[in-house]
Image (tube, rainbow, N blue to C red):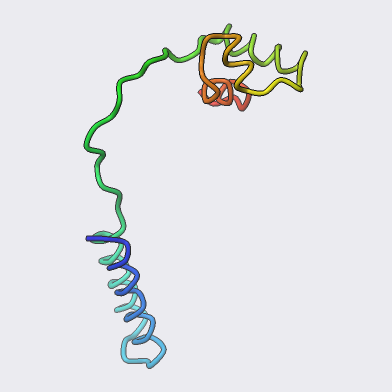
Amino acid sequence: MSIPTARERFAVLAKELRSKAVGPMYAALMIDKIVDEEMFRAVPVSRAPRKLSPLTDDQKRLIRKQHELRPDMSQLEIANMFGTNPGRVSEALNGIV
């Protein structure tokens, strides 16, 4: 199923509630059903292999120190300096594990 289908079903349910054609318990059960049937993400078909290993704690510390010393450097410049990518630099600067 799909998000647009869920949206349509929610719109019908809202109209029924406004007209008092259904009660709150029915509405709650319908919302549960719509969420279970419609509100999900498809499983990815494939995933590209990792090209870079996660940063070590020492590398993260050095990246944070470099950013502290040179706050004007972009994450791309720091990434190039450490042989990684800007996403890993962002993770290091934001404390993401």
